[in-house]
Image (cartoon, rainbow, N blue to C red; front, top):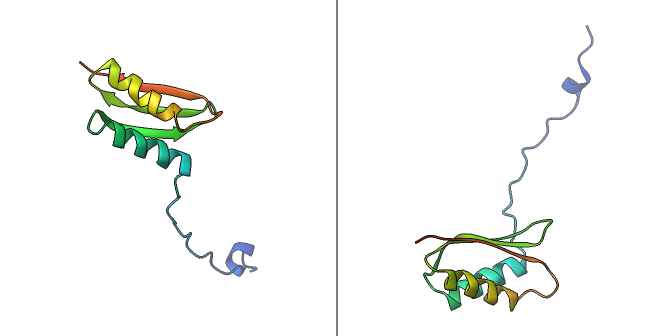
Amino acid sequence: MPHAVQDMLPPTPPARTQPVEEPRLVREIRGRIQQRLPGRVHFLSVELSDEGIVLSGECCTFYSKQMAQHVAMGVVEYERLINNITVRH
C-alpha cells in the first residue's frame, strides 16, 4: 500500500517567532507624547493603518487629547493622523 506524499516529506521545522520591530515612526510618536504629556494619556496606542496613523487611548481632558495630536503632528510629514483618543471625565 503506497504512503501518502505527506508521509514522505521531511517534517516541517517549527516556525520561529521573532518579535516584530515597531516602525521608527510609531516609536517616535509614542515616545514624544509620553515625554510631553507624562501620565496624561493612559493606554496610549500608536498604530499604522491603511487610513494613516491612528492614536488611541484615554485622557481626562480635551486639552490633553489635542496636545497629543499636536505632538504627533510634529513628527509626521505627509501621513494622515487620526485621533481616536477618548476623553473620560
